[in-house]
Amino acid sequence: MGLFGGKKRNFDELSAATLYSRGIRYHKKKEYTEAFACFEQGAIKEDSDCQYNAGALLFSGRGVTEDKAKAAYWFEKAAEQGDVEAQNLLGQMYDKGDGIPQDKAKAEHCLLQAGENGHGGALLRAYELYDERKADSQ
Image (cartoon, rainbow, N blue to C red; front, top):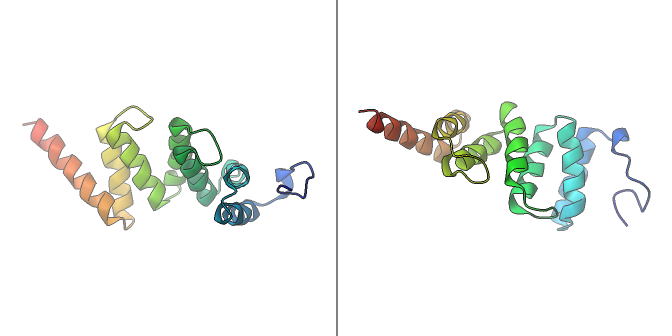
């Protein structure tokens, strides 16, 4: 039946928090297309949770065509607002060149941010990248 009982979608009336909540409900029911629609609209309204989740669905291709460049865009927006998982995943994408150009300096920066915000694995990889960079410069 869709988000609004078959009615035309009008996301303008909904807050980002409501869109996030609906997105989570749809995601739990594995209705990924509807979940993405909610998360994307919440992301446009600058909600970091929606930005992260829109990015995650784009990254995995659940409910939408896989688009890692667009996923990186939403991860970057969420990372700028302090979302630790977005910082970590964006760092991994830069580290591997996964859907975006490889950039070890950006990877180190993102992973260090995630590490400083409590992500131990990201901090470890940031230190590894730092050590690699120092070894290469000698």
